[in-house]
Image 1: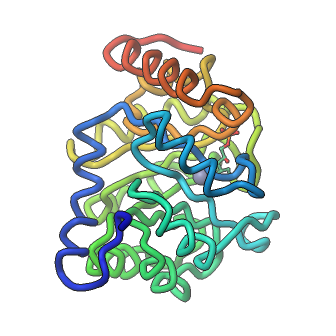
Image 2: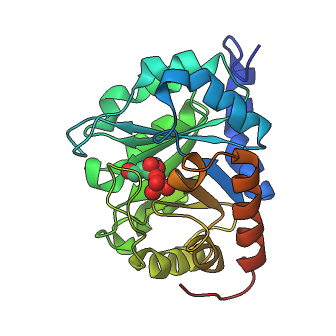
Length: 248
Ligand code: DX5
Ligand code: ZN
């Protein structure tokens, strides 16, 4: 049986501990299931699990909030039975309130919505937490930290986009570094700070030094043939930089 248990309070308690556990294990490399081999999804998940991944980052796109479509709750629900790894869902969708229950029921332990996609994030974040999952808020490269500052107390995770959301394989935008530093200063110690987009061997150290705990990585894993080696090397670079101050 996979990570998901049938129902009841044990599920809720288990899920709510995921953010805390990941924080304790930081730095965390979270493979982004966007550039994987979708014809062999189960095999990709198994390979990542064997390679030592601690969490899977699931990029949900609606062709509306972002100009691209990926996959939704049904695919995630199918994946749920294939692995014990926790799911970090990144909802790049308009009106996420409408679909929250689908993703919660599909078995996502962390659910992140975009500040640009909600009028008031508070009820959304609260509902995610009430369902027992970890609540996250993401911000696009053009959105200042001040846009989320009032809500960080309601978050288990804050996700800084270092590319425009919608596509893998883009170039890292250094504007993310200053935002990570600012957020690290103002976030409660236990909040996970995540960075997503263009993270690889040339950029991960700078983001780790700026305070990121969780690094979402697509191309720099899936464009290589040895996931274990790629994950290990990225983790090594993040660990080495976490207490120093390398720049790009
Ligand atoms: C972009 C997604 C990212 C992306 C990362 O909208 O949120 O998770 O797939 O891919 P790379 O690492 O290739 O930038
Ligand atoms: Zn993402």
